[in-house]
Image: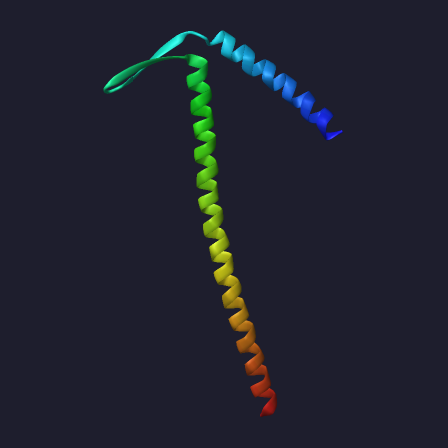
Length: 95
């Protein structure tokens, strides 16, 4: 069932990308200070799209790693507070 759904999603995506590439096939010059390249507009747009997705993904990983580290620190503090609370309860009960 999953294969059928993924196929039903993939076919329109491939058709849309192929149509996009066909309609944007004109060459565009890119000047990189020392050299100049001619690429199809569709290729440049798709490359920049994937670079943007990759950049967003990498930045998201950085944020998630920071949050995971913060959660680890907070859990450690919680455990320390819990153990301190237990010690205080036992000391209070002795009095």
